[in-house]
Length: 206
Image 1: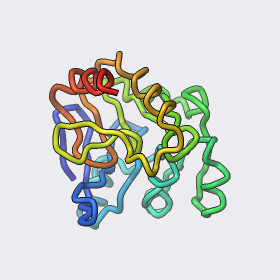
Image 2: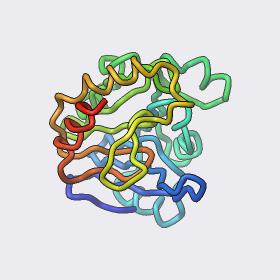
Image 3: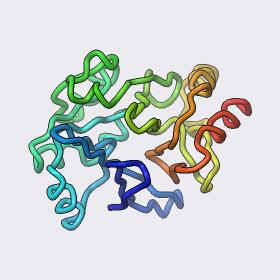
Image 4: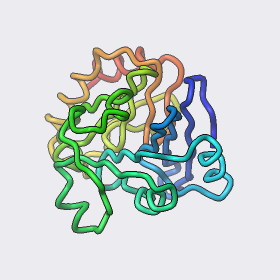
């Protein structure tokens, strides 16, 4: 588990040799409302790290492919899994064990909505993919739709996996006005420096 310059934000990675990138999960520490986001499996040392910091109360999932180890970790820590309402049919069919669905920030438990805003990207793998804005940290968390295959370079989901390129492009461009301190990526290397400039440049290029 790696700590970051953003207070209470930690992450861990599992290398994907076929793609030559890391898949990342995020652990946000907030007293009484610790979060995991799009969690990869945790080894024993990582589970101990989380347990020492109060465990996990909530697990946020951005899209069906990023359910990852949410069900097992929810059982281990006694946490609640929250996922997009638009993916309910897919996740229920997969037996994902989601405890509650959200269509926006207002649907999140109060302890979660106090630190997370739900934004949306359309046109990716899912009809709508959640983007989580960590409001207290001024950070954006992207699942699949925005990623990085080269450190420091943002890119879109590969075209063969895109359902509607025009909607995807428009959704990402609409987020280009944000000025995040960090861009946290489920797939590839996150940006902890120059994030706002990188997002603006990426949006202009689309």
